Length: 269
Image 1 (spheres, rainbow, N blue to C red):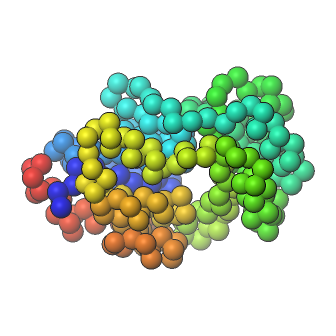
Image 2: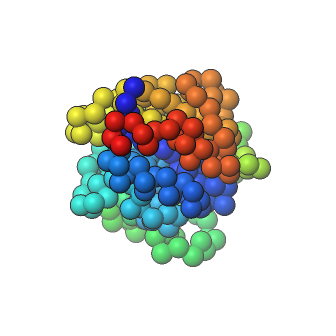
């Protein structure tokens, strides 16, 4: 198979545990981009958060907020896949009010952080005391609960009571971390559907895609693209559905796999 798109998750995949992109990873992605491979970053992060951890010029496209938008790096234009309506936001906030230690409302460029007063010293993170302070469309919500035992009950609450939304557990797979939280997106808005839309726009078959991932929101991509590759630190259920497994995010797993695949001498050479 001759692959045309090389895509990857960020946290736990492209990013190391200390949230950096290694020079080796950047070098090989820039090289492949120059050889006309389409490089796509696919992440739960928003655009400002991505810019905070890497040079976005490594990519042709970014799929952001778990698939809520597709961003063309060159012309700085985006395709919106969906947002969460205000009524649903208000109803969920009332439900989570007393059981969450923090709620993040994510737009294309900002995180509106509710309840947690700790300063994070990033200009795109705005601490709010009321939903009235949000003046733009919200694509995704993260809920950090006081107890991990509440995650499944809260997930079921959203999925049973909001026909237009989907909630799922997120887990940080970085070494030594077991951080869990609840992510909420519009229904049918996810990483895979956004990638499929991008492939259709570019006239690329999903079989011509390589994807690297590690966590639960990566499962549809891992199982459906032409070559799904699990990181060495990935969840076992992700590894079970992957065609290949590479080294961990802290051991340059993406760069090592691409070198091993010898992708740079394919037909685009």
